[in-house]
Length: 210
Image (cartoon, rainbow, N blue to C red; front, side):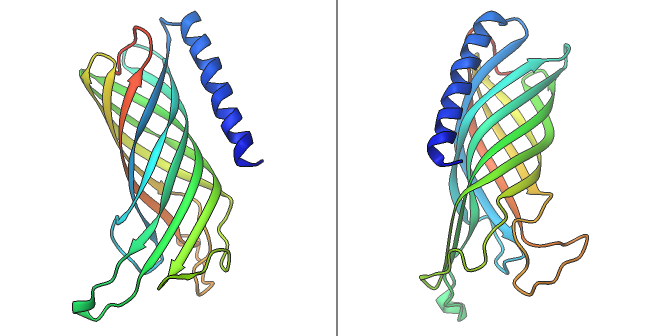
């Protein structure tokens, strides 16, 4: 499936969600979200959430009871790793890894006043990869797995009415590719994505961001 098909799927889901929101305003809410990821890759020998990317998409939130909700998202998420080196410390390496995913988080949320705590899995498909070491293009030499399963946990805070802010931590449960050495253990099968996401959220209609 090419990028054009994903865009069509995204727009179709968004249109259907808006229609669904009109028919079921009391139990379901449709929203959009956008913000930034700060990410790193565990196992690439570079530490720090230094890679900045875009994250954004749409979501449907359903009320399970007075305190629990479920949320289904379709988001575009840029992950990866970046290392600029430090000449003063004798580190002359430059490394950049960009991984663009179409991601579907499925979350359970607990609401408490202006805060909503969330947890759940995510399922991702790799759309594009770019890798450079000292400005040499390494893209495709060590290919990445097309699919990723991740774990998500986060906190939402209501700013006012339909507008909120979300912080989320995401960690791969499946490896995104093997280690360079080829070594693999059940507890460390390969490289994994780690990221912190900061987004603004907005719910359409009369719903609020709780």
